[in-house]
Length: 367
Ligand code: G6P
Image (cartoon, rainbow, N blue to C red):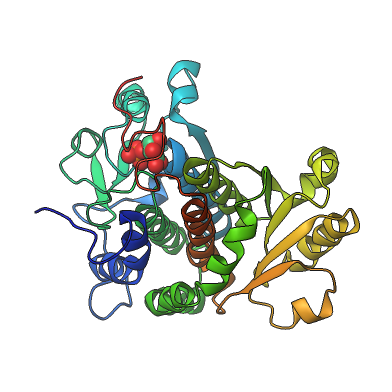
């Protein structure tokens, strides 16, 4: 079927707006109508037989993998290795029996990811993929292919595929934790209930997009933008910076907030907007103190947080985007929304070709 922009100015805007719906569909596929247990297609995965996970992907899908590392470690207490496919495939890394090799790809055709998968085929215990295109090469060559059900994604910069990848990876980590006994029944029920509520929370974050739009005129003037986050917000900061580079052509970099003083703080002056992603999780106070270090050096902080009142309490914050509250475990999926909106509106303000940015391809099928 031909896909059109459904009244939106760009495919990217349409795909951002579709997220509540497609996430809802993905959740229904894995959780069923009752929504109280996770069912994987086919024979599923026996996580009790697995010793470690190796996650491999490119681009945005790689940042989904990096987020999943935090989830699998915390929720299922499993050792996880993550790498970009172009490095992994030539490193000849030892893949021990007991390893689940997991490949994440929207298109299922990325050449490096496919080569990495083939490298693992006769070495790993099992080869699993998380894909959007169900009939793709990566899906076909996996022992098990898990669909993300995002629907056709046209914008080169991935949006709805990213949030659906994250959702499926979180469901996997939860299922791994359940099977391995590292997640108790109460916490499992809490997480599944939070996930069921996620589409509507995501919808609210999209409806609140006016702040991101209002900021974009000023962000469009910047030469460099820095993204900071800790814990689960670190991979998301990387994804936020990638989105910004891809479509607005503004140089953007992301750092783990704790690394700020090991280099990037030297870049900060009043011309550098610093996007700080800080949900009220266990690391919130630490992120706030990193933010104060930025402000003390004249950095223009854009704070994205669910901490109502922090802006009032923290004089000197340039702008803030107030987020709905969500279980901190789910925050990367929710905070992907402002990351997408900031990049989108900044690109629109700059007048770039949002859906077809220069030099980029939707799917990189040659090396
Ligand atoms: C290209 C696209 C990115 C995408 C990456 C991986 O670089 O421009 O948006 O994240 O490929 O693609 P895949 O289809 O494997 O997820």
